[in-house]
Length: 141
Image (cartoon, rainbow, N blue to C red):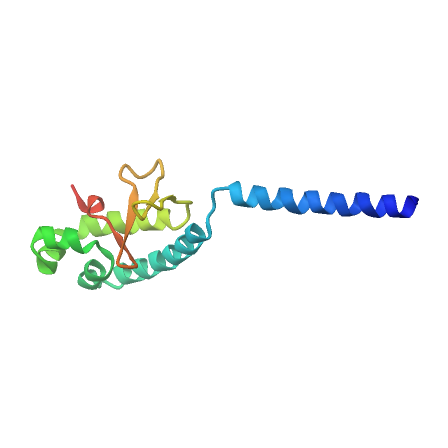
């Protein structure tokens, strides 16, 4: 009788532990979507840094900057002209910081925002047609 009672208590304890763990995991706010996006953006930011470091500014603007912002400026050539040396350095520095911090994620608007005290303007990515792009506010003066 004692063995059965001990076995029942152990089973109950394990069951409570599993349920508690499950509830904590589900309530933690970390969705699988966020985790997937965060990892993808971390890799993308390193590629972006490599592109900037290699001096491929036109490719950077075309591949990583929100198409609506480029269109608003009058096209890729105009956007690259405005992406001067000072702005290139600022973007590079902000990406270096952003890739090492936890972002805020809005699933409703598909925005990933990286905020740090050293950056007056946060680094914000917007998903457009399944791809992440820097928003135009990062390029405003």
